[in-house]
Length: 292
Image (tube, rainbow, N blue to C red):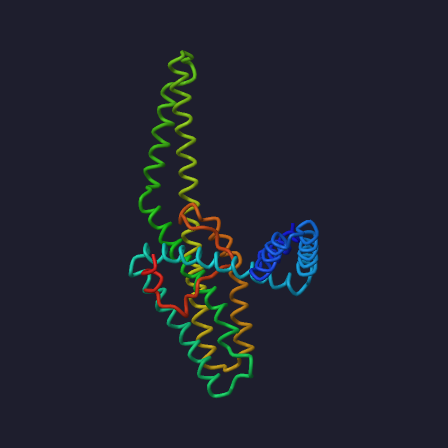
């Protein structure tokens, strides 16, 4: 299948198509298509075999496909970003904006160091860290949205009401008793028992949501302090390699958090957190909202 992809790309090359169909036209007008057509076909097959199997050409096609895939995922990430920014209330977004300002402060330090020649050529802190900081900010923003979604769920669901429903249904089951084996009593017992089970599942789901809400809150505080720490380290330690390792270390420490975000899709309605990250630090927040 991979070879067919490269052969197809070689065939669809506009210069090849121009030459190939030009050759076909020449063959048809030559008066000897029975001789010229096989020659044109042989040349085309030779060209496809030579170009389609050439490692450099294959790498170029793979790079092109990868770029298109990244662009597609990037657009998807921006759609999710717009969804988050439009639904989060302003007081919640204030926390995100303040943290973003910390990251931009770190970026400015990087720019100042690069301009003064304190960074090695080809090793600007900007290029080494910006993607990592975008990733951290993306996780933070999704955590904020997850916390907001869980809070709405917990506000609209009463644990006491669920417990009361369980108690009421269990009480009616007790009133019926096992002695009455009439068809009506059996139907009532089945309905009440199913209601108890459903309420118990609701209670378990509520408790899971409450536990996740607590966990997300702690993770928000942890990540916020991690990013603030990076900004403070950038002010006091002008060492690009050290700063890059710190950013990578924080990103790696969030793997469990990323798994939790993916598990909580039912509450947020967001897609899975994959490797694609929108450019949060290089674009103003208003740009993403206007684009939808």
